[in-house]
Image 1: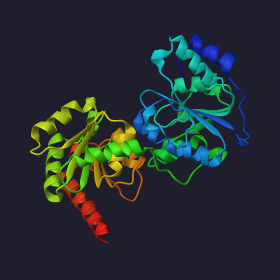
Image 2 (image 1 turned 90 degrees about the vertical axis):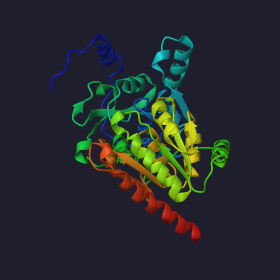
Image 3 (image 1 turned 180 degrees about the vertical axis):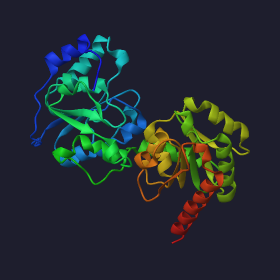
Image 4 (image 1 turned 90 degrees about the horizontal axis):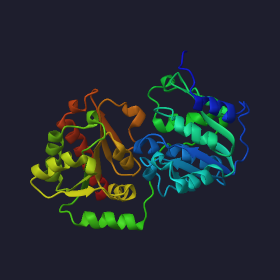
Length: 363
C-alpha cells in the first residue's frame, strides 16, 4: 500500500504524540471519558447515540465529555448521555480566548479518549484526541481497508470494516470501535431530548392549524439526489389533507427555500411552516404528530428519535444502514433514483398507517 511522503506536521505528530500499542482490552473503571465526534453531519451524530448510551451503560459513574462540530452539535444538546459538550470550530482557532477554552477541555485528566468513525476517518478528530490528556486513546486503524496513517496516535488502533456486514445499521457499526472492550448496548435507537418549553411551542404551533390528524413533511435534503420530486410531494400532501382532514405542516430551513416556496405557491390551503426551528422543537412537534414523511436527510434521523410513525424515502443510500429503527418506522426504496418511488406507493403506506392509528384510538 503506497502513500505520499509524510509532511512536517505528521513527522511532528509521530515524534511527540505517538503512543504505545496495547493489547489488554480491560479499561478498568474509567471516571472521565472523552469522545471526539466533530466529523460529519446531523444524521451521523444522531446515529452516534448508541455509542454514548453504551459508554454510559458500561460506566454509569463516568463523566462523558463530547467534542462536536458547529454542523452537528445541536443533535445532542440536552442529551442525557453527555455530561459536557464542547464545540470545536476550526474558524476560531486563531482566537486566543477560544484556544484557551479548547486547551482546558483537552488537558482535563481523562482515563479514556475515543474517536469513532463510520463514513470517513477524521484526521482532525484523531489529532484532538492525541492532544488530549488521556491515559488511554482508542481510534480507527483503518476503515473499509483504507489505512489511517496516523493510527500511531492511539494505544488501541481498531480496524473498522463495513464490508464484513454491508447491511449493518450505522448505530450498530459505530460500536465496533469499542466492542472489544465489551462496551455495548442492546438499544440502538437514537434519542433527542426536549423540554416543556419545546413541547409548549410545538403544541401552540399545531393548535393554529386547521384539521384533525397532525401530519408533517420534510421536503428538502442537503443532497439533491435524495430529494423526492416536489410534484410528488404536492400530490401526496393534497391527498392526505383531503382524505384524512389532516393538519399539514412542513419542516425545513433557509436551505429549503425553493421547495418551501413551491408548496406555498401550489397548495390550495394554508399549511403550517415550521422553519429554522431548533432540533428539540422539531422533535417535540414530530412527537405529537400522527405521521411524518421525509426524504433521506438529517431531519429523518430527528423523526427517527421519536415514537411517531414515519415514512422515509430513499434513493442512492442503503436504508438498511441509515433508516430509523422501530416497529412504526417504514422506508421506501425502488432504486438509486428516489424519483422511482411512486406517489401511489406512498399513499398506500400512509393509508395503512393512519387507518391503523384510527383503530388503536378507537379501542
